[in-house]
Image (tube, rainbow over all chains, first blue to last red; front, side, top):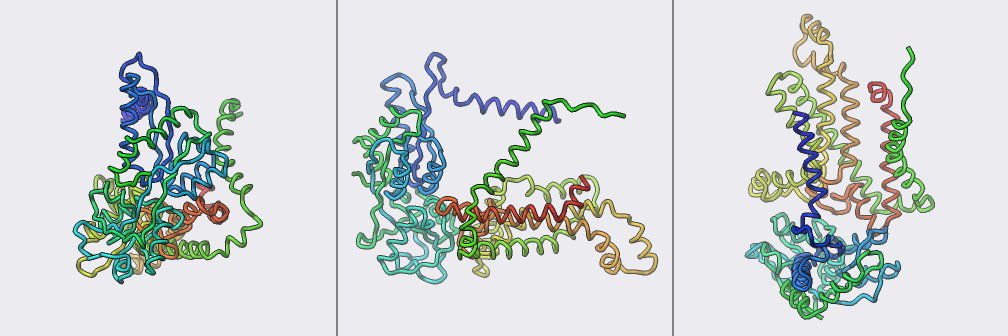
Length: 260
Length: 261
């Protein structure tokens, strides 16, 4: 019994150790280098697709995958904190200028950050909008469970701005640490509404979006930069160039972002 | 008889292990913003989190006492398969990753959960995002510590005292309250302290099931986690408080635990 368990654990451990090598099925091809990308949570669907295309381009050009992409998606504020504590990454893509500025001020950025996408806010509601939510003012209705991102998160900061512009005071049930947390609370039916990005709603398919008029809305700017803490700067520059290229921009647009 | 000398390699490995425990504590103490500590302590976010944590952990411990002692009594009475199954169910939260516990609580008591949907449809009650949810998450994770301690106490109890009381005409409740529970007091006490300490430190199940809102569900561990991103000094100060509480528990319970080990 114990022996079987130990054998299974040892096998699992070995399998886990060797799995990154398994990405290169043919022994003759060189081991891919890792490209670590720290990106805001809201970028997850778009960067997933961009990453696939980036690797497909590599395979087309060189016959095999040159860079293994390692994405870390979290709230921009958490990524900023981790970078500040010395986390090594090749690229940082933030959901606001403020956190990129903070990382830049820490001397971690190798070349000037560039804005690569815009995003707007939208109200996420359950499919079919059963609670009849049509404006930001509706979020102040009593009995409605509204979830926002924490003000330290870009999405939370933008939401607070939009609510202030609209002159609406909302009593949120919870303040999430990343915008995807807001989305999942609405998607699972625990919350009636939340303020997220247009891109979140387009890629989620589990919630409906209620548009926020332009005069109340906030345009989020997403900057990207190559970091000097990484070990793969040449590839990092290629990836950033691809994000800013026509192909990268059209993938971002398909995921609900606005290009630059 | 002389004991064999311990090889240096064992000492070296033991030293490395000890270093793993000691260095983080040193880091916490050395990087603590002592000059700002008082200001951080009186910050509303900090005081609210502390107040909420004390309330939730004590409530969770009280619930664990009310439900956990009877559970331990049933466990101590059963034998064989029934006992193994009951025991596995009761102690599962001790080995389950707390965040999984939070997801499970959510699927059970959330608005669309198996029990939560009934509550919501019948009374319009929603548990997640409330202090009740934070207390439930803490009770879920911490109660096993009390149950295990009390069950161990019951199994090692000398039942002749209870038999003597019964032979003298005492009824079930009288024996329980006058003989059994007083004899169990040390086990109940150490179980309750362990349970309280675990509840105080609860993070994963709480943030998953109860969410995060200052004064409602943002307990100290959650406040530490969030403050680390925006106000590291506040995070370190709150961590120090939890460290002091933990050390106080260890010192206060040293005879009970260290003596027994």
